[in-house]
Length: 187
Image 1: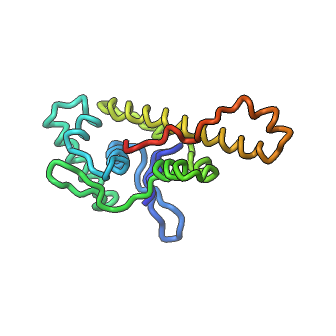
Image 2: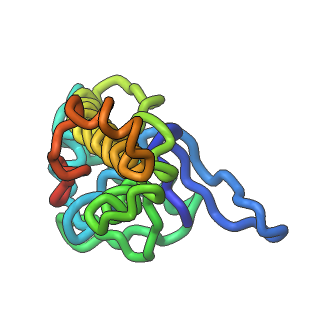
Image 3: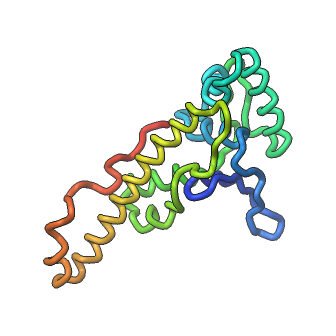
């Protein structure tokens, strides 16, 4: 499965004909899966998820809604999450474009990072009661956009280094910082 979070928000699986099939779009079950997939260790407490996505509900109702959402998620994509007492843990590997972007940045694969960044992080999601999730998305968006600009700057500098006449004109205006200097650690 592929979780796309950059430019679009969807979960894809390989189809029988080799083309990807969209399993889910921008809904709370996918928001929950994305948050868990991007969490350190792929593990998040139920209470944290309830606060993150159903802040507008009383705690017991939020936890009941979380259980219903987990059921709906399993109906659509199978057992991708394991309920481990008070925690939900990612059970099956899911490729995530944001993680691929971060890895390409950290390893200096700038053209790959540039191609991977398809647009703003989870840009097309909004839902009542999920303001904390949306704030988390905003922080991720800011960090990823800055990293993407750093990648673009480094790519331009590298191209200009191969064209000395243009390089002399443009080089002083560019910073010497490392691309993706704002790389993430965890969520």
